[in-house]
Length: 465
Image (spheres, rainbow, N blue to C red):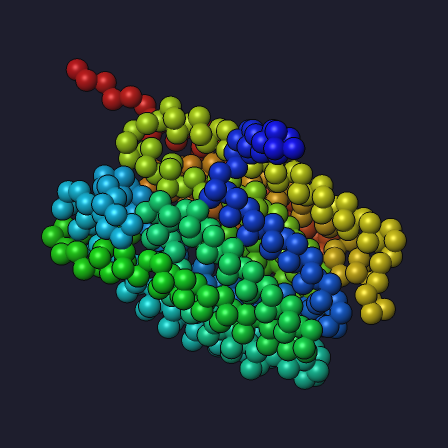
């Protein structure tokens, strides 16, 4: 019996090793998997507890809240990369202290000071902006004549989103210190609490209040765990006397403004669908798009977990100029993440086929009707896989503290925005999804060219005369 158990453990370890699963990915993937299964439960409860009109508001809330990208400006990823570069020159003295050259300790401390001050300022601007933009949008395009009570839930969601923005740099900072699996575990716990609260709230009739209050719950969970486990470490880094600091204007800004424009372009690519459909075709169609996107984005988040957990490793290898090892790890990780992405997309397609084939209902409401129909759904699935490749190439290059995808991202954002608005106006959801799919297909060769040429350029050996 014990022999069989050990053989099974060895087999599991062997399989995990081949597909690149380590502890960081276990927690990250667990969070994404729980989120994916949680989304299925959420879908069921949304169908049961919300009308098709309320579903449209529910998912459009999420798309508009995503304007926090305009305030974060890509700084989370930058913090992780810069911290990883500095930390690669330091050693752990114990679980709450780092030692090494004063220069690197000082620069690390300056990064923490800068991050906290930046996010506190922009969180205030975010909450004000969300309140104004959301109120204007829903007042103008609400065709329900007050049937859906959205104002107070929206205000609560705006405040909760700002609270999460404040704590995000701390998580990014700790990831940069190599606490990848630890933060992934915290985010898993946060996901469990947040989704559990969403389910309970939907069951008890909280309706539009669900998103806002669950946002507060998620922030509170993270604050409690971080305070218990890493407060001493953060205090020690904060208290380090700053004799040399990372200069924002000279070091971060020349990189950040490019990242910021890329991220802002990403908003117009990924988050414009729901508001446009809400305004042109009403909340029902917007709700179908929202539910489909929630499932697809969950898949992309899951598969990208293989890549994002490697950011500190990539950054450290680049800082130490170990380019051969960097390329080996990246290539293996890319193959693994692409395989996971394809498998998850096929599983989702099979799931939706089954609920439609058997016409599964919940409380007299057809589950299958809450998703996009097959053609637009397929047109959304293709870009999800292609974006896995593009995002992976971009992650690799951005770990060099450079942003070669600026023109690419802006061009993609403009093309997708125009396509979504114009084709959405005249051809509805088919026009939006077809335009998005074709544009993404056309962007892939360009993205690969950037990746291939910049990698060769940046890793070219320096010849000593």
